[in-house]
Length: 314
Image 1 (tube, rainbow, N blue to C red):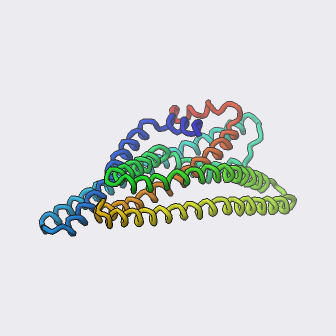
Image 2: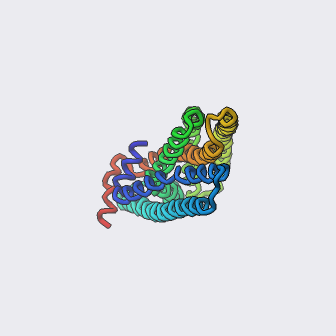
């Protein structure tokens, strides 16, 4: 994983820093709407309800939401264009490698090169665009929201935090197995596309069909692991929501907290489920792209460093 991230940072460090700054700003705003929501609900249940204050709180909450959405739009645009630039760079390097192999008289694995240029380069490039900013946004959001819930009611904050740890353990255990399937699938697909470029298609058709069956079986086993992990994660999220409502209701009945805090904590729980799910998916994506990156390096032979200079020459 560190090798993949070093390569991404080397190719786009300046633009990644800008994306990270935007991500931190977005994460810092994540818990602010919850505070407005809490104040609005508590104001509605107070004895001296003032319409002007309600309007003020509503306008303030909307302003924060619009600012956050504007920053997310800018982040998404810059990350997307960066990803497309890196896709172009990877394809250029693969093209140069193919030309060098052809000039030196070495065998060019046409099927593998075609797959790498058309599909694998795009997957790696898209991932690289948000490789740093995406986890910063989501981890920052988790810290912001859980920190806010804990500051208003520590017990509810502990429930929110306790939801994350078992999910991390489940994902780490299941993803190791999924990574094996990802590498196996890519190798089988490359092998089959290489054989399809031979002149006598009929001679290899049966073997290629068998490889397609292998890909199907590999994906089927991958689905079992991924869906089973998803089921367990959903159970944990459901239990966390019930726990917050039960504990929050108990604290309200005993006068130890207010309704606004419980509502804000429940909303915050929904807010952290999104980042948690994203980080889980992102970790899986990192793992899969690490495998693909290592497999792509194999196409450059024992010394891929020379092709890393292409962007500077262009």
